[in-house]
Figure 1 (cartoon, rainbow, N blue to C red):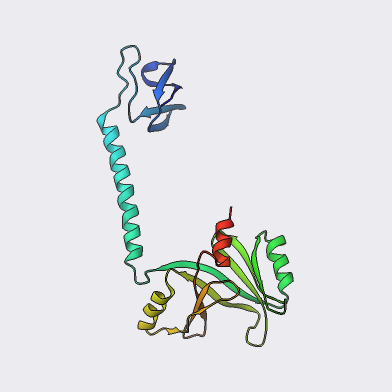
Figure 2 (figure 1 turned 180 degrees about the vertical axis):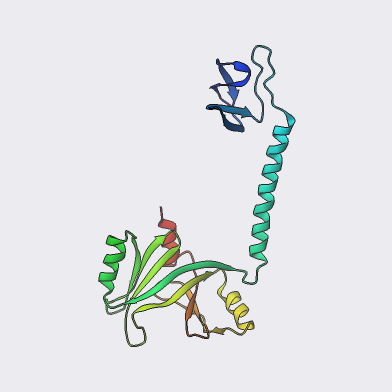
Length: 217
């Protein structure tokens, strides 16, 4: 354990005081930094620089309250109606020219290309643009069944079988589970009453999505 000198404003002292590294409570009072050691400090010329018990009690209550809040949030998520749902992964756009769209989102918007998948014939099937660590824009070319615009959004789940069974039991229009040969994700789809498609994804470590997430800095 190493000590470091700090200028301690307590009791008018302005000489360096060796304070053991630990937990400190810092406040600014009338332009001066007040550093209160909450663990232990040595005496200075016979002066007791230990702090009152209510400082420690306040810290203990703060830490305890924070831990209780974190635990309550975690329990609420696990006990919610959609247990095992991780979150939205991507929004998919159908575009007339996929390379022009890639250029816009990478060069103009500044988002990096995460990965792309090609058909056996070598044509670009889809491109993923990475907005954040685990959020993407999926780009695909328009066709007769896929007009220009937003055509689906993707939601990640921990367990595809459990998630699809859960929504089927509630009467949702859940489609078959299938692996993606291109991205190695496990996929399914749910169509809402308005025809909007929610793509479900389970992402194994070797999926392109998971690899892109792990590369993110």
